[in-house]
Length: 148
Image (cartoon, rainbow, N blue to C red; front, side):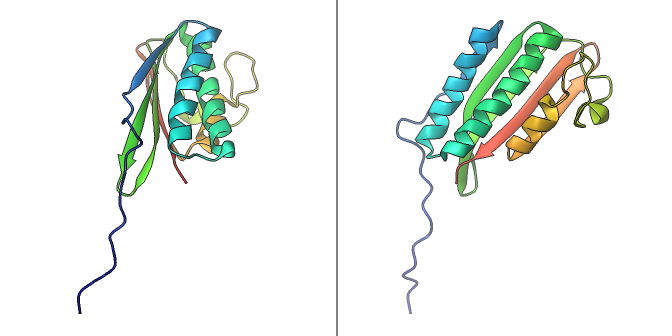
């Protein structure tokens, strides 16, 4: 008997989005990065909660870029892995790097006197988050949020 079950289709959003790279030099650039990510995520039919989580995680990481490195870049891209689609964010800077990454990923850890919720908060808000940091050379935070 022939198999009449159709394989799940994988579709890209209309007019497959081109990756966007936003230089982070000041607060207005953070808004641009958030808006670009939210626009892509909306096309992927993210829930309102997911849109807020994505925007908040970008804000946290981009504020860290400004505060600790004086500037950097946030790149936003469409990601597809198997049957799932989502938004990938790569935030990078050429700042001082993170001396103790294990400590920096703990709630309440801050070298600036802040609340210490940036990296651990972003990790909770995103589906996956990875940090690569070399003292003296800078930090790259890669994070992903998948569509429902």
